[in-house]
Image (spheres, rainbow, N blue to C red):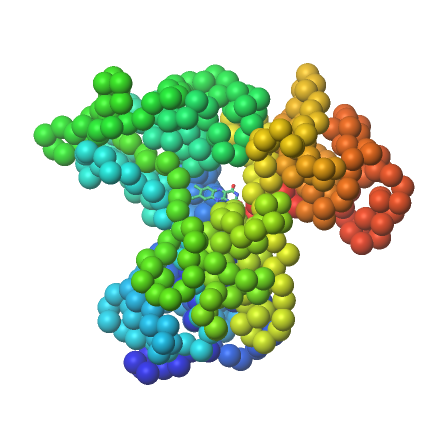
Length: 440
Ligand SMILES: Cc1cc2nc3c(=O)[nH]c(=O)nc-3n(C[C@H](O)[C@H](O)[C@H](O)COP(=O)(O)OP(=O)(O)OC[C@H]3O[C@@H](n4cnc5c(N)ncnc54)[C@H](O)[C@@H]3O)c2cc1C
């Protein structure tokens, strides 16, 4: 590739957002050059499935997000395993870590998130990992293959921490989760569903220590992890540490630019940033959240893909608006099915909660002035998709809110005018619990 080559569409990030954009561009513009760049060396893979790789349930080939000939069939070039070091927004160029320069007409920043690693003594020891990439999963796998009877400390009991715990337990590794807050999965679940997960995790043999954090990682003379020290001075022996306290948007390419950043790259309804012809999506972007009715980070796979699609359509000359996204988690860690979306807990007393806590299922809605702003369902989650769509479409549900959490609730339980209308516009809605809450 020549140094001066001008690329019509340059996409940084070969994951949900980048692929969504490339697919949308090709629907509109069959010939314009598209290059997707990633510092990861793999074709696009399903990031949420790295836990299945680590547990041994899934091979690398089964992680692919698109068929092997996807790029070729769509005339998309890739530069993989190469990092973009700098973007010059005035001259429309990117510079790679190897010094190579490309010029672009339209740029998409789909750089995703980066794991938060707090300052902590000993974090450079051998055996300390994060868990956000296939590379991480492979490195942990290799490390564990050299150990027998490994003990792991997982720092952080959020989605990533619980997911890696499940994989490690499946491999016979003993796990202690250290969670600073008073309960696991405290961001995406409410107290009741957190307690369900807590019980299931402990029943599977893991230890959970809440209300504490790790202040130091201790290593042996070979520089390998041998224990962690908690903030109360307690020491936990371990041979591997996974730091999973959260992810923040990966913003290094825009940090010193004129691009508007809040917690992520701020985009408008067309997924365009404050610099014309520069778009952003996915975990790196702060896009419209239809529950909070403002731009927020909503770092989940479907939002990244959809945001990428909208960006791609606009980049290639169509006008398309992002309908908004919100938090949406459909999990089944340790056999407990839970769907949560929007708010998991009421922010204040102006919100109302409608709860049905049955023997085998738990359903909670959060409402503000008759509109659903959040939901947490466990056990019987089959109809969660219908509720999610009522929330997304901002339907006034005050007069039938209690019906929504009943055991036999279905689309036909809604007032006739509403179900007729919804069936006409979305014939598959009665099945939508599965399609709309499935992340990838
Ligand atoms: C363990 C785990 C489990 C998850 N489970 C779920 C789930 O169950 N459901 C769900 O909806 N979501 C889940 N998520 C979140 C979901 O994976 C993300 O929301 C989604 O991957 C975001 O897509 P993205 O395209 O914005 O960015 P990413 O998937 O983060 O990809 C960004 C890519 O850009 C590359 N890149 C960044 N900067 C540069 C640069 N300067 N040069 C070159 N390349 C660069 C990165 O290396 C990366 O490959 C999970 C995430 C993790 C880590």
